[in-house]
Length: 184
Length: 370
Image 1 (spheres, rainbow over the protein chains, first blue to last red):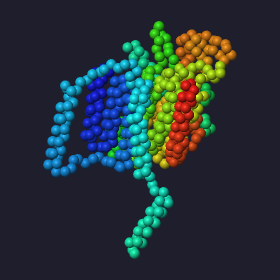
Image 2: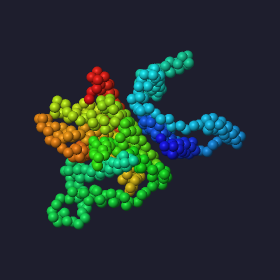
Image 3: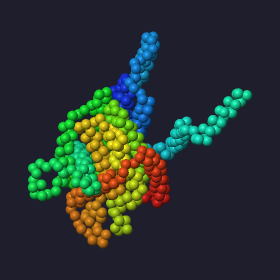
Image 4: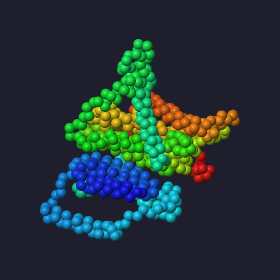
C-alpha cells in the first residue's frame, strides 16, 4: 500500500471518528461511524487482507450500522443536550480525559509506533488461506464463538418474546390466587 | 500503467452501459407498460412533427428520454422546512454511488487483443468480487433510509423505515443465494464463474448455472427485485398509502437520482443474474476458435470477432432479463407488508439455507458440482 494512501485513510478514519464523538445529532454520528468503518475496511484491503476488509464492510458498515439506525429511530433520539453537572465535575472529567489521552499517546507514539508494510506471501488474506487457518488451527475457537452467538440469539428471543395466551391466563390465575390468600 | 488506463476506460464504459440500461428500463416503464396494459402511453412530444406528417406512430422516445429528464432537471430543488439540509442533499448520492461502483466488477467479455496486447474485459478483476457485491449492496440501504429521515416528513420516514427493513431482510436471502452459487463454482471471482460456464453437457446443453442452481436463480431474482424496490416489492414507495415514501420531499435532480438508483439497481441485478446463471458473455457452442455446433460442424471465427460476440451476447442477455423484470413489474400487484416479510423470512431464507446444505452436500460427495 502506498504510504500516501495509508496516511489519507488514517486521516479519514480519525477525523470521522472524532465526528462520531463530537457531533450532537445521533444520525450524523452514525454516518461518521460508517465512514470510519469503511475507511478501516479499505485499510484492510490495502494491506492484502481482502476478505477481512470486505467482511468488515458487509457486517459492520452494512448490517450492524443499520441496526444502530433502527435503534436511533425507534428510541426517537433527538439532538443531545450539552454536558450537565456542576463545574467541579466538568473540571474533573476534563483532567481525567486529558490524563488518559496523554498516557495513551505515550504508549502509542514513536518510537513505539512504527509503520511497516510487510510484504506478504502470495495468497495471503485470500479466502482460501483465511478458511484454511480458521477451520484448522482455530476451529475450536470458531465453533465456541458460534455457540456463544447462538446462545445470545436465543437469550434475546427469550427476553423479547410475548407471553402466549395460556401463560397470560396462568399469570392471571396466579395473581387471583395470591389476592385471595392475602384477603384471607 | 496501461492496465490501469484500460481498467478506468472499462469502468466508465460499464457505468455508461448500466446507466443506459436504466434509461431502457425507464422507456419500458413508460411505453412498455402501455403496451402491456393496452394503453397508448407517452406520445405527445415531437421535435419537428415530421413523424406525424409521414404517418409514423409516435414511439414516445422524445417524451421519455428527452422531455422528461429535461423537465426533471430544470425543476426547483426544494428542501422542506425543518429538514436536515445536509443529509437531505447527501442522501440521493449515497443511494446512487454504491450501485454505480458495483458495475465495475461485472465481466462483460472474455479477453480482447489489441496490437499484440491482451486485456481482460472486466473493469476491476477482483478475486473476491462476490463479497464486494454484497458489501456495496449493503451500503446502498443508507441513501434511502437517510433520505426518508432527513425529509422531516412522516410519510417519508415511514417509507424510509419500510425500505430499510425490506432491504436488509432480502439482503439475507440474496447473500444465501450467492453463497450457494459460490459453493457451486468454488470461486468468488465472477470472471472465473463465467469461464466455468463455457462448454456443453451431453454434447448440446450449455453449461449454464441455471441448470445446476435453479433454486438459487429464483431466490436471487426475487431478492434482487425486492432489493431494487420495484413492484411487487415497492412498498417503500406505495403511492396509495405513503404517496411516494422516502422520495416524497424530493424534487428535480435529487428525485431523478433516487429513481435512477432503482432502475440502475435493476440493471445491476439483471447483470448479476446473467453472470451467475446464464453464462455471462458465453455464447452457446462458441469457443475461442469459433462455433462447435452440436452436430459436429465447426464454423471458424476470428479471435476479435469471438471477443465482440461475447460482449454482444452479454448485452443481449442483460436486455432480455431487464425486459423480463419489466414484465413482472407490470403483471403482479403489490404485496401487503406482512406478506412481504413472510416471503422474505419464512420462505426465501429457509429455502436459501436448504439450498446451501444440499449444494454443499453434493459438492462434497461429487467432488465439485460444476
